[in-house]
Image (cartoon, rainbow, N blue to C red; front, side, top):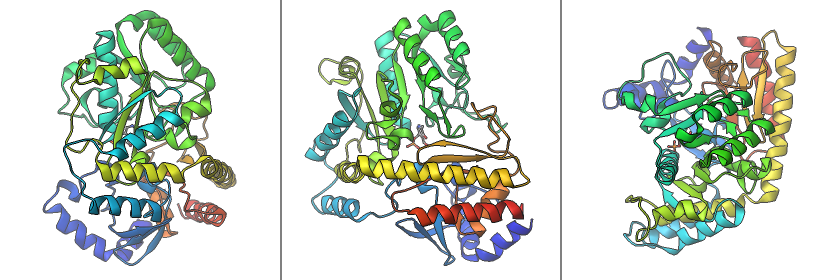
Length: 423
Ligand code: PLP
């Protein structure tokens, strides 16, 4: 209560804006994930690793738009490229070279990617990947992970980390089309494919369970995912919307397991809305307008400013930048775990590379059910960290950007120590 009161005292402008927003948008926002009690605070502007809030505070952004802003905010090369493209005319109903460049970069970086189709969100990316798998196999059921988040289209809303509420508005038929397995449960995955593998259109999973708790897959689980799908002749889809930052060729390169299709989004649009479905030539040929069988359009698909923003981002996010980002992430997770171990709370830090999450449990955390995320201390921790000048996800998830340095790692761990003491 005390933390919350100090939040309210510190954010009168946000409170006024939130009230204004509520009279025109349910809950005062259009993103369930950015909402928190008593009201979310408003950002005025963002630059590098900092958020400037409307109430005048400056916060270190350790959320980076849920991993999208991997270079931090408003990186010069990206801003310049996007602005130049805007001046050159942006919305046109014909292809432009920037899309070819971005597709070429992805094909170069990722071994399993022969062809790419762009869309406007990670949601559309997984929707199109699943559609390609359904068209390929003629099947309508999918196998996904309990707690696996792949966006907001009907079928992938099934089996998402529950908040206990009934999610209405999703057809019942979607439930019948989804078979879930627990993350990292190799035996369950094998048994599921032995029993119903031939009814599946695909297996879709994240190489690191993101929204479900930032939990890395074991090598055994990823290899089994590849083996059971190969045996059943079912496409394996990796959702790398979050994990692509882990290596130049994504988590699949880092973990040395190649999927048939990859869903991408977030960072590959340079800060503008984006998604992509990509993969093996034959599967992707189904999107060919003359010879394929899948319609795929969108007013903003391959929007030139987005494409050029993506190219500029990937050029900056080269191997050296990624190695450095992952090194800092490893150091941060180590420090946070040390702070947690020395505190009176039970803390397990999960993650990989520059991705992490704080769980209020003594672990081990290997799937969504064993994660302490969303527990009763997550939101108080969020407020306590915010009071220390650190902006995290309300559920305790965070990630680094290349705009941060080693000092920021020390700042975050010291803030975590003080925040835990205050709980
Ligand atoms: N897949 C994963 C792994 C994600 O983390 C997200 C978003 O957080 C999505 C898909 C959906 O992407 P978008 O929010 O762009 O629709």
